[in-house]
Image 1: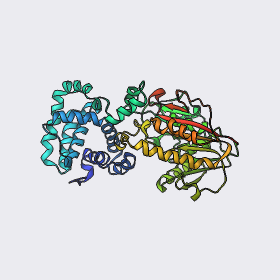
Image 2 (image 1 turned 30 degrees about the vertical axis):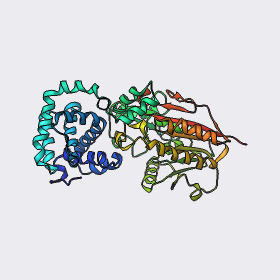
Image 3 (image 1 turned 90 degrees about the vertical axis):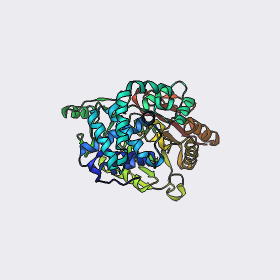
Length: 443
């Protein structure tokens, strides 16, 4: 992307435009980019503004781009797509953030200059002023365009409609909502009631999550590092849907447990909190950066596991030959169930991704199954909404595996499938997750 003509900090909107361009034009992950860009802001206020602006534009980009294109005499050239992202950012400030119009317009116009596009300042100004004059008539056009109305790519709308004909609109609406900030209390250090009292004493409104024994939801967004007891490991951040994983393993003392594809370590630490007297917990993930995240989370919570950096699907290269009593496979997936937390998924995924991912998921299942003891339990989990990655994978695996048997399970608000249960985004305000429990028969 273009190099800024002035230092980044002179206009946070110019910096945010470059961040959005790296996601939309270069296909890079927002998770990876955001910390780098926030570090370039001159204070925490600017960093918070950048984050809100970035998430908002990515959440609503199909709609914002549609409005921009109605206000332009001709489409923006491919080489100048930064301008489109900048104008979308200006519209988002006016429509959703309620930034005073004079500030939103003036600063967005200045950002064009900083982005080495001084010739476009008049164009940016005209588009934003044009929206002010025509906002009512423009917003009335949205229902005529499916992509703009739902703010999702057409392939994703069509795929969700095919997979969930009764729920697809609810899913799309939930994907565009701000997600709740959920915590999981570390029961080795305090109880949920004790931590709720701690939050209340600190003036932080929160309440318990009704379908979990250790879950808490904060009523307003908060910097988690500023919450009481963060450094001491009193809690972890984890959505309610993800908190169902560890209990499904039916843990007990002296068991040997494998957490496959374990990063960033939320479920790893939950396993250890539920059952601190395991014989061993092995957590494996593919990349050194991701296994470092597991180790950092365990260190903060003062928990211990055997952490391995390797490909879980090639156990002949890392497994010590000792069978596991329990395996949690949180498989790589399309992540379509967590779009409300990661709006860039709308643009980083493509229609054929699910086929490629399904191959990886099935290979992981087949590779890890021999590592499980007879009588053991494997929990398969994804944050995908597509049957091809979920129930269809389990059906294929079970049809090919004579010593595997689906086990009964009951997740609150989960929709029963032929095998396992599916949680949909927004139902009981959870993320979208799929779970299946498979027992190994002693033949």
